[in-house]
Image (cartoon, rainbow, N blue to C red; front, side, top):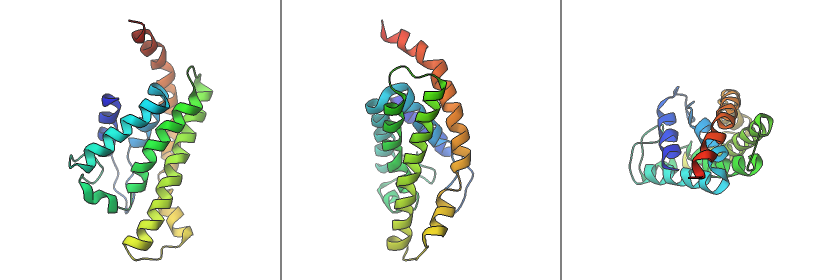
Length: 171
């Protein structure tokens, strides 16, 4: 769990800055945590990641600290917890590539659903703007095509790593 929380932090710093929602590799590691650890441990790894950031470690794309709950992208971080859980649930205990891909994409859609909702609420009630649904969807979903591609990579990596990890659990 700690390794996948750390990889999510690394993914935050591999980014392309965009207004409101930077493009990062975090979602790939979130999905990988659910695919490799299962729903509960995958979600727990993301709770560890978010807790580390909220207590002040600079693990988020734009730093860290409790004030981050007011960032427009904070909803995506909350979505990481649910997204990892969805990945683990959809994948099940012995997923092949197609099932892992479905799980990764389900997790991505969960992350984006929560992220876009909180982005809209943040822009409307914290920033005091009226962004409108169309504008919020445009900025909130901008990284989705990239994340669907890295979801494929996460699914492939999980299929390759799962047999090796399950062999370690027998010792």
